[in-house]
Each structure stands twice: as C-alpha cells, then as structure tokens.
Length: 391
Picture (tube, rainbow, N blue to C red):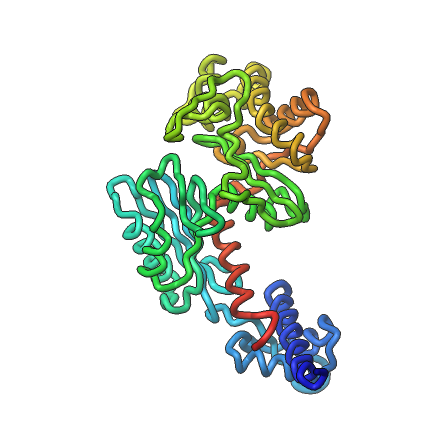
C-alpha cells in the first residue's frame, strides 16, 4: 500500500511548489531564482529546478537581468503573459462590452457593440469575443474561458440563463449554442454577482469575507458573499431583492414575472427619478437626478433621506437574515449617491433593526461587471494552466 503512494508525494510537492512560485511571480514578479527560493523557502538547487520546469512548460520566461555585486548578473523571470487568455463580457439590454486579458490579468483587447438592432444573441456574443481577442492579437485557441455577465437568473445546476427581465431573447439552450460556436468553455454569471467579485478583489470589500453588495440601477439586485464565496441559492435566485414584498408598494401576483416587483417599484430607477422630481431635481437619468440633489447641499437632503428610507427596507430585510458586517452600495444610482446616501442608509437600517452593518459606496467606478467577469475567468484558467496537482 505504502509503495503505491510514495511515488506521488514528490510529484505533489513539486506541483504545489510550482503553483506557489507562479502566484509569487504574478504578485511580485519579475524575480530571480534566488529571490524565488527565499520567498518559497526552497533551496537554491530546488528553486533552479522549479524555474527550469516552468520554463519547459512555457509558463515562465526570462525578461531581463538584475545587476548583482560580484559574479554574473542574475536572470529575471516572469509569468509568460501569452500562455493563456480569457474574455469577459458585460451584456446589457442596449450594448455588449467584451475585454480580453492575458494570464497576468492585463487587459489587452476590448470591443463595444450595440445590441439594439439584433435578435441574434449568439451572433452578438460571438462577434464581441472574436473581436476582443483579435484586438488583443490573441489566437482564439489560446482563449481558455469566456465569462458573460448578464442580468437575471443563472441556473447553478445547468449554467443556463433561466430568466432575464430585460433580455427577452436570452433563454435556455443559449449556453450550449455559444460553447459550440466558440469551441471554448463559456460561463454565464449574474451581473451583480460579478460586481461583488470585483469589489472583493479590488474595491470596498477587500479583505472582507462576508458582505452584501446592493446594486441600485434600472432595477435593484443583491450579491451575497459568505466566507469569501458567492451564495447563489438552489435556483440562482439568491439576491433577487427586487421581489421583496415590502411596505409602500403593491405586490404583484403575476405568474409570468413580467410585472414590476414590489421593492423594484420602490427603489428602481423610475422610482428614484420620481422622488428626485418631487424634490425639485431633474436629470436625464436617475443617477443624474441624484447627483443634482447632492450638488444642492442641504436642499437635496430630503430627497436623499427618502431614497435612504426606501433602500433601507431592502437592506434591513437582507441584513436581519444574513447579519453581514458590510454592505456595499453599487450600480449607477448607488454610485451617484456616494457616501451621502450610504451614510443615510446605514443610519436608517440601524434605526429600524437590531443589526448595524457598515454601509459604504462602491470603490469601483469603472466597469465592475466586466472586471468581475475577467477575474472569474482568470481564477478558473489559472487553476487549469498552473494546476495545484499533476496527473
């Protein structure tokens, strides 16, 4: 029994060391063999063998020299950017944005297209992915994963879209069609969930394992992060807080789910515009109207108070169930409201419940859904390409 296990042990250690070295090179590179040895705790000989192995696998490359004291200069190594690519896609009702990143996370290609005049979602996504890769000069066969952020429900069991309120042409069967068309792994993910991934990676939720992200835009949505992992629910509907039956709005009993749900009626963009107009503030969009109220100083206070009171109904309902330490307000309206709105929501939630989460505004003003899609794709592809075990 023991003899069958022993040969696997050195291979497993090598694989773990390789993975650790690659992560170090991504985070702190470029590095010399000696620096890698120091940081991983490996001997010079083992570190040299590791670098040679990674070079042979095409995962690291020499990128220059570091001048030393006496003796020859030390070679500097970095992860080879072109060893794999990913594409992230943000799909909205009017446009699709796709970006291509190399394995280091550097975004090297991007394309934006209107989706207003098409009823062919496969064609739209195909063109966006192909053009983003082309813009990055990345051969399509090096694109190891495509992650698409879409509004609506994604079935955790099948990965397919089951319901998208404002993308009526997106439906079951679309995932298989895209995978066949692009001949690469394609993954759908709810757009608000992807925004939370980005927030955890490089935004207001860095270093926080448990938090919720409330997206206030055309509608309202929620992403739940527990123990550093997204909580999706059995059908992917965890976080659909637009459907919260809250006081102040009629509760539709529409089986088709096309009627505007209660909390969505109270806190979505149309409601925000109405509240702002009532307070004397206009704007082409709900976000513009909120910015106008904030710019007015104390005169805009009553508008922000009313918006906070409405938002707090959804935030409080969520927080008395999950009790997270942090709530991030995101989306066009959440972002426009800034700390002025976030502080009011925090105060209101504490006033009407037993929980007192910190409520802050998103720190990601630039395409959080796209960033989350790229990060999700990169996490998966690095696991595949770098590996933590070898066969």
